[in-house]
Length: 311
Length: 328
Image (cartoon, rainbow over all chains, first blue to last red; front, side, top):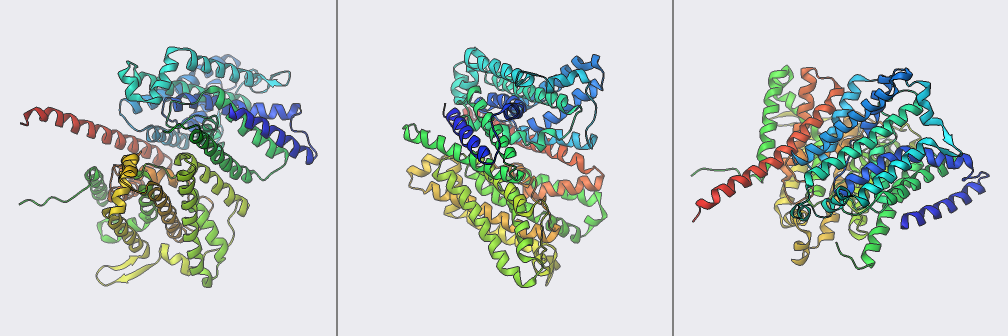
């Protein structure tokens, strides 16, 4: 996978740059930093991979993350006994939003871009109307999820990898997973082959929303409370799409996978960590991120050209 | 003989929506009982309508331009910094702004056509680059100031014989709209729609697909620059002027019945979509819906519009199928 070659190259270049600056990139703190950054983006991007492979798109994840963090934190409101209900309720809300996304796309036949943008705007209106800042609180016991680690590896990162492995297995080893690729490749052909295309799209959106919900729950655990704009401030909607595309997925659908996406996530997280170590202006990060995104996708397109495949 | 106005497919619904909204406005607020109220609405809407027209060119040819919002912000910040309050700087800065719009459009278009990167990704990357660059350059707070003669375009008015004082922005908007309609009626405009519909057919017919795509992005960039000039005059300088405008422009285009993915829809409908959106926001304001719910309403509206468009087409097809056996 090209994306992992790029990751290794980035780690080498980054290590040298940080070393010249008088620091160490890949010490325990650095690894911890990269993994922690990867956890949230990884969850969202794995979900995004499913919808993108299916030929769809989800622009609503960023607001959904904020909403789920609030639902979890407000339900728990500091009580240890309410942890499970909080998590379950947050995931239920996420699944419901995913269901709405999927149904608007399949039943109302709205373009995925517009459908999920519309749902994002609705969520945003709700958040702006009801919240001015952080709300709810998470019991100390639940904060273990955000801060505990096994050796240098955060528990949450392990959980994220476990979920990613599950997603990989689902997409590559099960019938509904193959259907995602079939629908993304050519929806008409898939339909004529007997695939229930609408069901496949709805499932992809529900799973994607569930992952965003998990990301929200994790962020609530780390922050100690729910925050309405925790997802949008980090730009998880566009960032997750960027990670998926960096991982080699085609926005038109039918191509890509969880493994590539994780590579994309690690590249973005490593870039951020390097910039932090170098104390680079935060706004410069955006510029570099934009350039990296364009260059990476251009390289994929070029490779496709030279390998003689036409689209 | 009945005269039927020649409207492109899908234009009628948005015009109906627009008329309903305008009538509703007249009932909702006393300001809209006379032309001045509507003129003010047009003035307010001009930047978004111009942006929507630019976005239309890109969308109808099968692409996205997500960079227009941050381009507007960048243009306003650049204008304030370069003019720094001096009237003498107005004209060359306007030239620089339009040139910068062309440049951004060219870069978007060249990467899309030459490097074969999907326009969604290209313009998303451009959005990140422009946003970052603006903040990097300004350190978070825009510096400098606009000159009075620069702000005339956004807030000033000229005396027109019959109508009285007409805002500059409305005149500019009309000029852009007329230009866009003439362009779309011409051969180049028609081919642009064909590119969005079936790129290969255009290529096989000898059309210059790449050049047309490039043109669409350049037009979008230059119109974003124009919108920025109006918006800066109207609203002033901040680092948030352009925020979310790209999605608003796409919403407007879709509201006008233009198909995402390209190949269908008229530029007048896209402009009407933008105007409807602004009229809707004014109406919500008058009725007392808070600003926070504005985006929720926008969300519901665009989903409804797109669903209606999809099902409208489906129903028409079903009707034709049923009618077909009756034909000899």
